[in-house]
Image 1 (cartoon, rainbow over the protein chains, first blue to last red):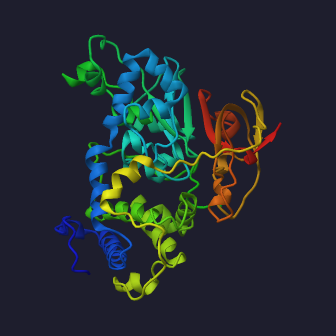
Image 2 (image 1 turned 30 degrees about the vertical axis):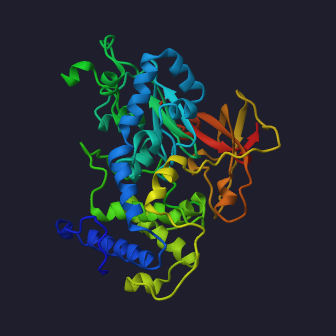
Image 3 (image 1 turned 90 degrees about the horizontal axis):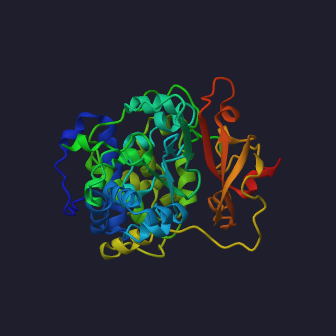
Length: 214
Length: 219
């Protein structure tokens, strides 16, 4: 193990209950050490990347996009026609959000996003994907048994609701715009954004009712 | 390739098990794995398509039992060795033994915001006009390349409909193997659930993929 300390925490011995974790800790430590010794990576850049996705880029970005679309018909129309530009106008651009598409739930159609082949996910608006999104159960079943998958998230749709599954097989990244909940007429965009969960923007959930926040 | 990554429609993978209030990382090493992977991507030595292919080339038993950061890390080791940046002996010993290949770029902390905000757009202009139009029925190709492809097995040799012409994009099947970007038109193709899954398919289900032009044939 190297003597390098990069400002991040090395206290995590609570993970040593699992040999697999220990193995991965050692592998990643070796990689980082070798690459740092060669001057190929900057440990401070790694800290900056982690900090970005822990504090700056997350589902609040996407929630603001959805809230604005609910509140501003012109923006919603722009989001439908050119999601990349409409989303960039709010300052959300970049890695794994270079080519955005927004898909709108309606009273009769529910959208669900998956990447069966890897873990494609709209980082610029949702941040890092949850573990389940990248794991075999969701990736295998979302396309063949979407209702079964949704039930595991506590979401049961009407039997005649059409389900559209978007398999992210190319570089287009999909953001689901859930339906605006009832009883939200007086809310401003920040209050509306509070109702927009990460799962609602993947399609494994719906937007929260305003009562849920009270 | 028909690898372990091509999961659409597979059975037996278990429940989805979403975790309430899931943290962004489940261990410190995952943070470092993310940062090291992105930093090495900035070398400019390989493409995102080559890195995806390195991941899907993991042994199936390894792939299916690994977390995604483990998949990333294992594939990164392959890419770093393939491109001469590190040796297996260095990875085994955990220290530098020799100077390796020189990257085009080393990602410094001050470059991170700009690099993440810019990303890596992969739309490219092409001279040809699209061969397919919106509303047209198409059949996806039936093939089983041993190399990288983004046409999932479940969607091969199926009849679908062009829903949108999405622009022209780098073609991963070539780009993953250093054969150039070979940009092609990209289409959103939508299939009825019954076309894909047959008997017992959810009658309310449609599925779309984004398909490069050479994956498609006129019906």
